[in-house]
Amino acid sequence: MLKKLVTAILVITWSFPASALCIYRGVDNAKTTIAQEFRDSRWVVRAHVVSVDYHWSDEDESWTLYRLKVVKSYKGNLTTRFKFFTERNSGGFYMDGTGGGPDLDRDYLLFLTPQAFERGLPASAKGALWVNYNCGQSKVWNEVTAREAAELATLSRHR
Image (cartoon, rainbow, N blue to C red; front, side, top):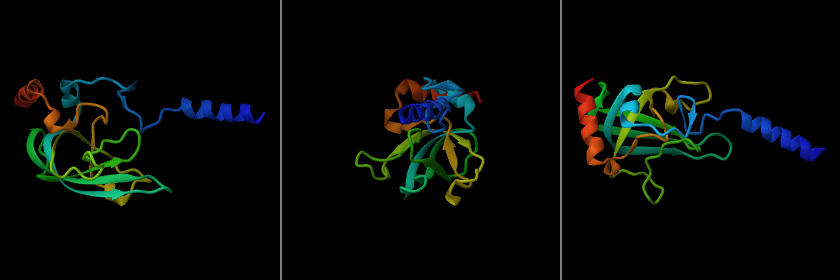
């Protein structure tokens, strides 16, 4: 009886979509293009990580707040310095170095959107931006190919 109850609870729990997973427009683990995310994002920038504030917790949600400086803007009029918030879960977007600490020496290509401040988020998240799709085209700048950089330049001219 207990085994059936546990199985039923697991089935019900797994049937609800989790916001932490990589879901883009209702598609789990969607493969996006730069053009798609460019269209869907309010801001597209190359940004440099300036500082990082980690919050680790066993009791509530862990999260990270990054402070970044715009190196180049491809879309939108973003302030020179901005905050980026991510939850530390399976769908988070992290700007951490290979050692797990802050990646202060790197630039990132970021497709950004505003996020309404929701109850349950830390006060630090207020006014911070989020990546359009955590498993999409946002990445370390040195992983951007010449073709992708050219596509960004073209999209930027035609906005």
